Structures are given as C-alpha cells and as structure tokens.
Amino acid sequence: MKKIISFDLDGTLVHGKYGNMVWNHGIPQEYSRKYGMPFKEAEQLIRHQYEEVGEANIKWYHIEYWLKRFDLPVSAKTLLDRFESYIEVFPDTKEVLEALKNTYTLIVASNAAQIFVQKELSYANLTSYFTHIISATSDYCMVKKEIRFYEKLCDTLSISPYEIVHVGDHHIFDFETPSQLGIDAYHFVPDHKDSSNQSHTDNGKTIHCLSDLLNIL
Ligand SMILES: [Mg+2]
Image 1 (spheres, rainbow, N blue to C red):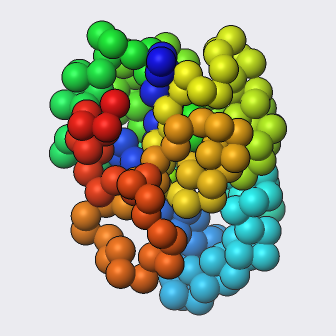
Image 2 (image 1 turned 180 degrees about the horizontal axis):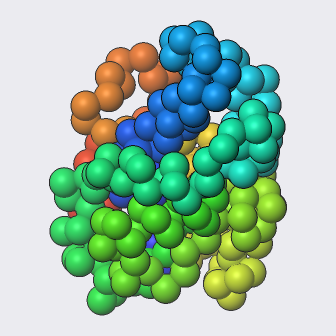
C-alpha cells in the first residue's frame, strides 16, 4: 500500500516560469548592467555557461556559485524576491493536495536549492501540506538523476520504495530514476506542452493533469 506521495516542485506543482525568470532573465540583466553588455548578448553568454556546466552537475543549482562566478553585486535573496510575482501555482495543485492530504503523507523532492523551494512554497501558500521538503542539491548534495538520491529519500522517510509514489515533469529525474528503484513514478507532461515530440512510450505512466493522480491512486 502506498503511504507517501512525493512531488517535484518546478513544472509540477508550480509553473517553471519563476525559475526561468531568475536564471534566464535576472542573472543576465545583472550581468548586462555590471559589464555594460547588451542584454541579448549577456543572455547568450550566460546560457552558454549554464549549458557547459549542465543540469546533471550540482553547481547548476547553486545560485551563489553563479553570482560569485560572474561577480555580480546582488544577493540571491534579492534576485529571488524580485521575481516572486512570477510564482504561479498550477490550477489544480491545491485541489489535488487537499484531496490527498488526509490519506497520504505528502512531501516535496526537488532538485532546486532550498532557497528557491522555500520561497516558492511559502509565496504560493503550499508549505503546510508537506511533512518533508527536500532539496536534493541542498540537503543531500546530489542531483535527482542518481538512484542514490531516491535511496536516501526512502531512508530518510523510513519507507520502502514500494510504498512511495513520485510525480514530476522531468523524464529522467522524476520518472526513469525513481522507477529503477521500484518507486511508482509518474511523468507529468502538462497539457499545454506539445507532447507529440515525446519519444517516450506512455505505459500509463504519463499524466497530463495533476488531478489524474486522483484516479490512479
Ligand atoms: Mg521539475
């Protein structure tokens, strides 16, 4: 029997545009100001540097690392606060959490650093739904790409992989990796995304609305 439902945060409970604004707008804007470079050029340069590091590398997620690397005169907190109005909860998130909260223990398992996770959950008034709010990169110093992450998650929660359901929008981090450990994982592909270019076979493990979970569990 399932006991715990684990959710990814960005792109799953909350729209991914907030992170996008901080990383792909806020940081290039600061860079452009400091070095007198046109925004478009700064944007390209920074995107290129992010790509060189890559999302499988823990550095990718540490905003302090990037602010230091680019020597930008702004704190992470200021940047995160600046774009808070872009934090947008998906329409059915609260309804789903409300429906599940009395039957299951709900947790967040995100790759984003705690500073982002805390900011998003508190701004969106979601914090109280979760007994554990785990950042793979801040709390475990690893990326969800590794099976080790999900093993450690199960250890932390004192639970078997078979008793946990995980849902998230990244095919590898949220679906393939937890599935390998025996976690019942679901790949969340929001309706508005074009799913025709998804080469992955479905097997009933893709959901297009978070509320689909209510029919599955
Ligand atoms: Mg995500």
